[in-house]
Image 1 (cartoon, rainbow, N blue to C red):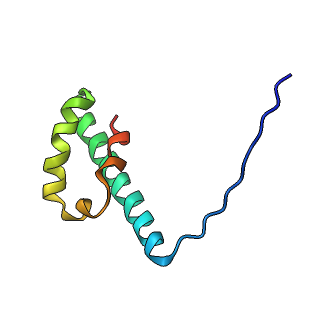
Image 2: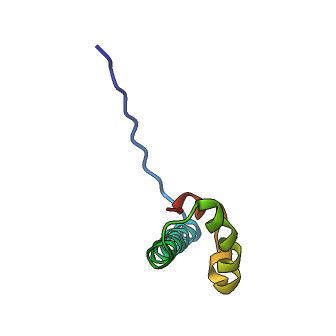
Length: 77
């Protein structure tokens, strides 16, 4: 019989960290929805091809540069 363990953590971010977390979630949601719509219009493409487009997307939308771009890479479809 296996025994499973669980850990609970509670985070108390500062106001500045809370703002950055919300910006990251908002930008990630925008990138996900953008590529979801892109895939629906143009058909399914490989994530490598979409990765090339991410830099252009960041240049067109300045607010995407405020957060880490590594948060966007896991949302490719």
